[in-house]
Length: 133
Image 1 (cartoon, rainbow, N blue to C red):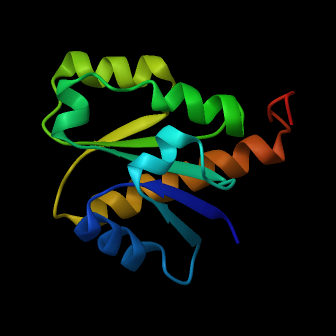
Image 2: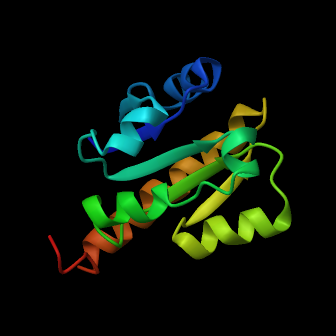
């Protein structure tokens, strides 16, 4: 079973994601502070919730930290709240595979998560994994 590592301080979002992935994938939830400290386990894919404060401060280096610890090919989905096109571009330039706006439409999250899992399976199948692992 694939592991989804979710970084968020938004408990409502975590509950929504948990409802989507339950029974299909293992969800590992960590508060954002543990990401900053580097205290988290391995995940097959990563979801990072960038709230308004993180976006306003352009605090996106966490993507680089994750890739440094879990490997450059780790698929990362950024959930953004009120991000400008420039902020979204910065997030993608840092190495996130995709992004989604914060929404109440759980089907949108479901599709993005499925896409991320399929991408990870593709990487594994064709051995495009990181040489650091």
